[in-house]
Image (cartoon, rainbow, N blue to C red; front, side, top):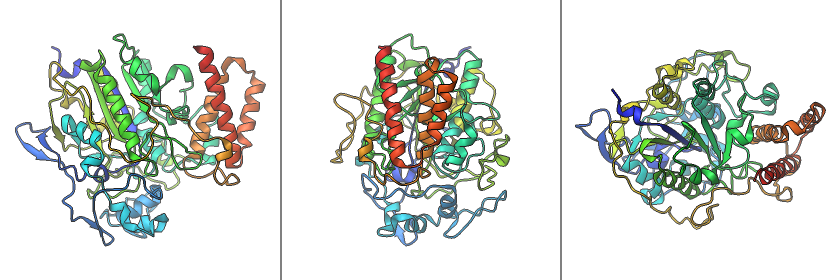
Length: 504
């Protein structure tokens, strides 16, 4: 007997950047049907309006762009969740959480001129696209980042139910350990599982250097990834061959840590650009022959330092070598969730206007894919995670909106010419580099530089000799400054464009 879940043939995941649930939807006031108890009406676990932290209450509206990037590295999140000055005891229990340190941590990491900014949250009218999706489909208000830390380890959890022990933004030293095949996971990745079961997958990249390419064995650039500008046309094919699709946004200018020109909703770039991306992905699928058998998840990798009033609970450790990995600076046990993030589940096979209070994290993506196609779990984390299967209850597609509202007008510019276009230049020319003499080992730049190197190797492919590839490695390892990085990434970008032009 066919169950409604078996009618799902395609899973799509769009993962954006660095926003907490309260920050994005805390003032949404969404009411609806309890997903676990369909006879009950319920309300999103959002904000009342009098929640406070460090002497500042939550407020709306929020600014379209943050003046500084709130800290969200592992030690900062310990302070945000556990209080100013708190530290994690290596290999020990996570300190008691009271969510008291968001304002203090923001103030001491660049936010001192206006500490209350970290408590500012968007009004529904500022994010009409995300709010429309959340009201039409399912908002999961207990979806947590997989660990209390930054982007890279949390994004690894959505691919492997583990970060291979990484508990911080990767440094040059870390990357030297990945060379040149990429970060390995003791239990493998969801891409390995899908490949072994003859289920095809695809990554759509918003820029030339998607973060996922830092993973071992994802090396076939023009096969494993496609430009996001091709997504709409690709899903109009009723013979679309990919069961699982992961969508990466454009991260913009990571070279200067401004993220300008991006669509990832990073706090120091215009949030409305990500609204355009969400609209593009939804409307592309909605107009597709795949729509009646599709499930789309829109979520965020981690909270980005923004306030959230719900205290995250304990998590199941992956059970691999994470705790003993040389990438684990804090000797973290991975037995604690990070802060809540927005998560909206979209499908015409899901009833209208649900609110799901059950606990999820990024490993729930894997648990869902595994349940759908009979795959075994990768780690203890996804083995114990709730999957999204129980949300799929309809035997046939229901009526759903063909379009979403236009994003709000922030007064800024987004890389979306009419009607849609999703690629922007990955970074400015070298002459526009800020702080050109500064060291490379800051923020997300080392990680994206590494991805650029792997792309360089992949694009060069069979036309390069072993000696030439060794020279490419030496050249990469000789980079010292941001000016060096700009020239290198521009060179790789040109090689990709040339290869794409030849392929056409």
